[in-house]
Length: 135
Image (cartoon, rainbow, N blue to C red; front, side, top):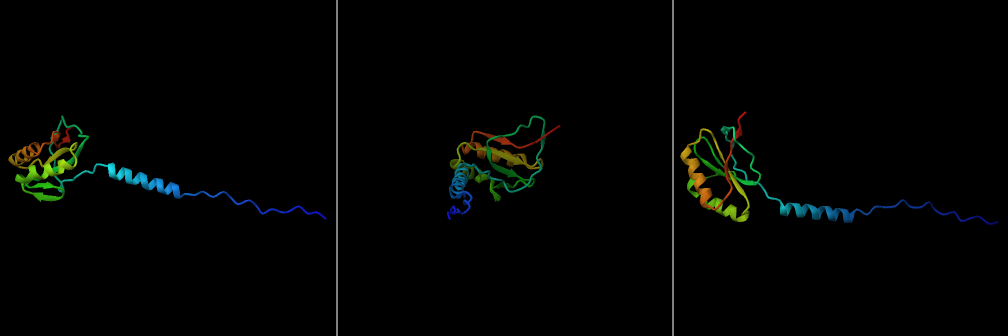
């Protein structure tokens, strides 16, 4: 007697995710290399309010002047006379970067102007002083 050969049930299709994982890692590396990282000042300041305050889109370097007149860059306190050299070094890494000066509303005006001069002498074209929007 003839019995038809019983075939085993077909195996379910398998998805090979190794190329997908490789592609995700390549995208991750691409975005990490091309990202511009923000350099924080390292201290919280109470910014003054201004009706004409606008958002700066390309600022990636922040300098802070606290109420005691101390200057902060990348979470380190620096001498106000060394602002030009420090900003020039960081500006060479990212020439399109702008600088925002975060000045406390009780900070000495002379120190803020010294920092502003140092930033401009370092060759930075886009400089702004931070303020909160006044209603």
